[in-house]
Amino acid sequence: MTRLQTLPVSLQKSIQNRSLLKVISGLNNFNPESVFRISKAAGFGGADLLDIACEPKLVELAVEASNIPVCVSSVEPRLFPEAVKAGASMIEIGNFDSFYPDGRFFSADEVLSLAVESRRLLPEVFLSVTVPHILPLDSQAQLALDLVERGVDLIQTEGGTTSHPISPGTLGLIEKASPTLAATFAISSALKESRYDFPVISASGLSEVTLPMAISMGANGVGIGSAVNKLNTELAMIATVKGLRKALDSFQLLTEVNQ
Image (cartoon, rainbow, N blue to C red; front, side, top):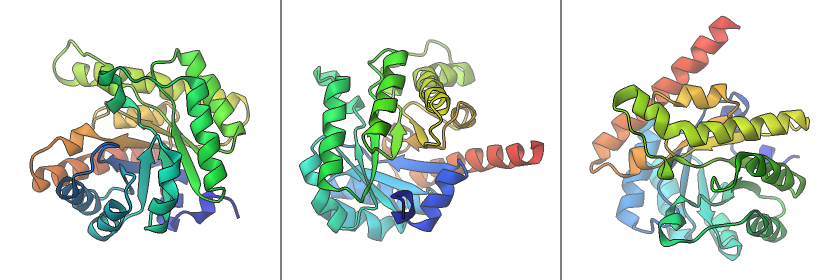
């Protein structure tokens, strides 16, 4: 059995069908009320996966509120085992965006070390790792290849939080997503060239406009954070997740029709 097969069947299918929608509550969001609202919105809105901070009680709360698989994110591998015991389906190193404003940056060697330690602690658990977007694109691609060789199961991109669009409307949304889209293409292309059939999640700075672009760039799915978790009401969160789900499903349907 592969580690992919340890995931819930619904999650396996969404990865294989390149239609995964992940809602991210935030690596440093330990507020139970906030996580609860985001979890409910993810479940009601039709997300496939919920990504939360690595804390066992939050895992239990999120599983109950969302009724969808939960991923826990951290940069401290020692925290993962208890979260998995609490019900997390997968673990993730990153996302690193929240650290940059404080001047905390992660090198390729540090990310590799965190991945190796996580794999040592939990050899049978599905492991995702974020590739820091502060690295040049060729270095991001090389890090992705190195991570795969060390037993990582999924690569995630980032980049939207440091993008500064200058245009309004649709063009601005595309500008916002451009670092993430570029990383998605560079990483997925490098994996294919090395003959790795390996899933990539495009995350950070995406919107309904740019979700289809991320899939076209080679992603198996998308991760959405601030577009949902910064909203003030649960109703607005649910509506946004539903809109994202519709945009992703519409693109998948169009792709199938054109094949």
